Amino acid sequence: MEILVFLSGLIALGGIYAMLAVALNVNGGLLGLWDLGVVGYFAVGAYSYTLLTIEAPEGLGLPMIAGVIGAAVITGLLSLFIGYTSLRLQNEYLLITTFAFAEIIRIIAGNEAWLTNGNIGFFGLDKPFQDIIPGSNYMLFFSGLVLLTLVLFYIFAQRLADSPMGRYMRAIRENELVTQSIGKKIFSTKLKVFVLSSSMVGIVGCFYVWYMSIIAPNMFTSTITFTVWTALVLGGIGNNRGAVMGAFVLILVQEGTRFIPVPAEYSVVLAGLRQFISGMMLILVLRFLPQGLIAEKFKSVEKLFKFHHNSLILEPKGVRENAASQGAE
Amino acid sequence: MLQVKGLSKNFGGVQAVKDVTLEVNQGEIVGLIGPNGAGKTTLFNMISLFLPSNSGQITFLNEKIDTATPDDVVEKGLLRTFQTPVGFPKLSLLENLMVVPPNEGEGIFSTFLFRKKIIQREQEHYEKVCGLLRQFNLFEKRNELAENLSAAELKLLELCRQLMASPKIMLLDEPASGVNPVMLDKMVQHILRLRSEGMTFLVIDHNLGFIYRICDRIYCLANGELIASGTPEEISNNEQVKSVYLGAS
View (cartoon, rainbow over the protein chains, first blue to last red):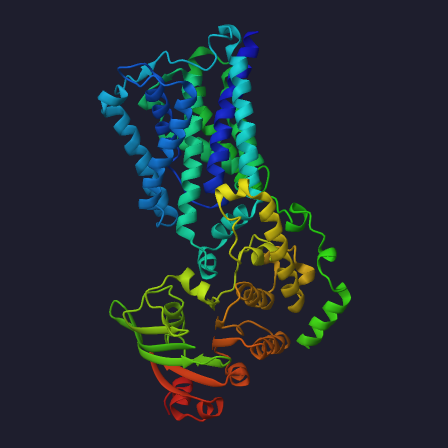
């Protein structure tokens, strides 16, 4: 039974990271934005949810579902501001700016004690349906809830990637200048996708609060951002299946190393070794599978929309081709 | 159709384009030549609004477009290509072209709300793309990634991409560079065919043979200044153009 609880905890944590990776893949993978602010939106989502749902005087005491929606909206609004100010920047400049914003958010959370209760944070927070489900089985239920949401996230992201919108996003990633030269409004698209991705991260923030049942600024260090990016690169950037797989593999390896039987005096060394192992994994994957464990797959438009190209063209295929080649000769 | 009046641009102390005035009429193929660094591409960038100009005026279809944005001018029908034709390397040829026309499906909400309409629109675009690819003999490669094409094929794809946006004038930046003679012949035929269908061109190239073959009129730039203009014959006999290209004698 204990192993089952532990495993479901592992799945829940892996699922949370997988959701983050899927959300990040929307703007980092498909649109090619180098966004290092993940943990910032994560924190904003988590804090918004907490402050909206806990009882007065600290919070507003709203129902949980309102908290989740509120978390998505507040994160979206904040990322609208962050995106509007920083999305004109390219690559590494965007990376630095978003990273700075994430740090600012964490520092604000640590210092504005009237709002966030400072470095102590809040603890003993409620979880969904905890009255109905007995405590010993709760983790099982929770991991199921995480997986269910992950599936929804995945379907959403996959639909987006397979649509004309996904194609447009990949075009921006491939060549911004050319996309601009065919008359597309790149900045507003980037902003929209950025806000969407951040709101998704904000929703995942609620799950993190439920998982930990506490919230404090030191839960939101940049390690989370790097873990998510590592998961995405490991699994295959631009590919939702890769994002999910990368997250689970990474969490499994990091948590699984707890069970290597070592003498007590080495356990500290082993804890330090965990970072080393995920770093090593990243290097090996980049060396031998540069596109990640599951590479981004090309899907033909014809298959995607079930076109039958011969039936579409009214003239017989041969005639048209001949006419065209005669014109070209 | 397209008038450029007194256009200037300087980058810091470097005067890249100095007081250039030129005109392109409906149905013409106009060449723009000049040695490296003459400011041809800078001029292109200004006309397509990728770069703001320091002074001067650009008029397209009797409308001032100096203050417009790149997407505005595309909507009006002014399209440009780039010197290095890379397109979207990791997108297939079909995708490379289908992404071009304005599409209601390119929104987050519409992706989920108007699926039926999107499929219909996709189908229309798909037919148009297939027709174009057939014209340019690229149809068989429609599902290949653009990165697998040869340089010449990429140039053709570049032409197709512009045509998808239903242009009125096309600004071609070095369409002949890196294209072998056989493909160049095809390129010439394509351009002449499009012109006979009513298209207007402004072409930059270093291949003077190619320019002389297709152009009605030619402008020559050197050090950012317009030094000559006229028919291919006039330009090929112009002493100043010769000295710019071959060095002063």
